[in-house]
Image (cartoon, rainbow, N blue to C red; front, side, top):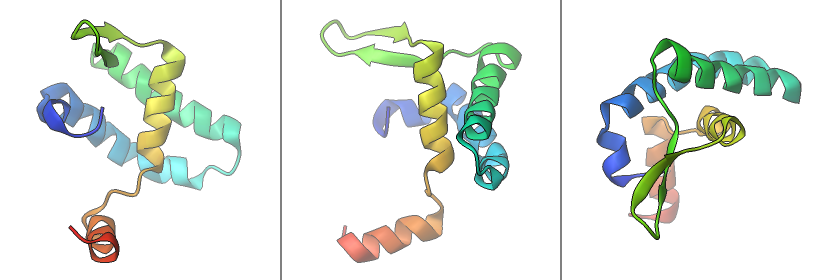
Length: 98
């Protein structure tokens, strides 16, 4: 998820570093199938090379569960699209206040 505890987990630092390293390749893609392939490469890296998992918190029980490959790829694609540079955050703060 966004914010909170998940930002401080070491596995998420590895994931976000991989996303940052992969973002230029993703931004060069003009065809959806290429973007899907790049997002899947992030999922494969985390699941395979790093031995990680993509988890989601079930609110009712408070337990974590592994999401489907499709859900993980969707999360990776969103992260690859996010414009979350310090400059972009500063522009949003200026525009919307905080």
